[in-house]
Image 1 (tube, rainbow, N blue to C red):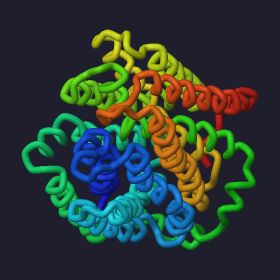
Image 2: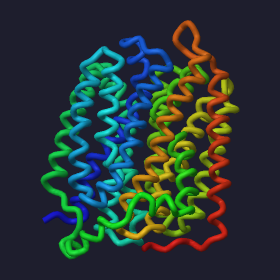
Image 3: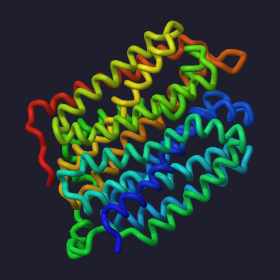
Image 4: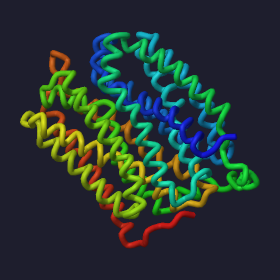
Length: 404
């Protein structure tokens, strides 16, 4: 008989893989460019396809979670990531690379939202912030693996073999979810029919949802665009660091994000979601301004500090889902969470591609990029972020929301 903790662990394995897949290209970008002769625009597009498919899938994942449950929806989708990982590892065609990356994105698209939907059923509402923070913190160890360990494995086995082994683990994760997870405790089975009520329009008509979605767009979009792709080139080209040193700083960023995910749930439970999100997002967007000003003149210690602050504060984006959880009744949770995720992951897809277009204009003959180009990237995302924060500040006129 499954319990809430065994279900937590099984979803955690799937989320580890999701985080790993979304973060890999920041480390193997040079290998992809060298082996496949990719341009900056192609690299940004190919990486962004993961997030584009991931985002668009939320439109069907939300209703599916509320209608069919987290177990069936999540485990079924994961199977497409198995196929995508094998395809990505075995082709030299740019179009097939995009297809493989897209299939991986589709397969991983339901993992976090499926997990949060399950936790909303298995854990009391007042523990949702802490549970979700701890879950994402542990799952984010996938991004830790996608730094120095991935670079070492890629050097030993080659990046293609890494993805083949990843496909095997992904298949195992799907089978475990199919076989050992239940959507709700036995005591809630008679409430399942209510999960099919409501539509996406019920979420979209709530004006408070849009304030959260805009901040999620800015935070998640810039956080993962940099962590999963453009922070590596920034460190190597704008700061003139070696690939090994850049990987170590990316490890600092990833480790700090894990700490941030852990801390976010605790602080949200003690400070409230409004105060926590306003403080953390202000710090996150300020760090982006500091990174823009640090071009060509930052010490290694200062860069390590900025990576730490970027990772720690950016990780608090997960608590926007706690805010959504408080705004909507249980039968709309799947739809509300998935639509929020659509804006966040959709932003990653858009920004990864758009930043690639901008930086591609400064490409140098040696395959690197002009350092000054990165200043514009960080200024752009910081401006977007502070604008979204101003919109979110309208919540200050309201009382702290309660769980429904």
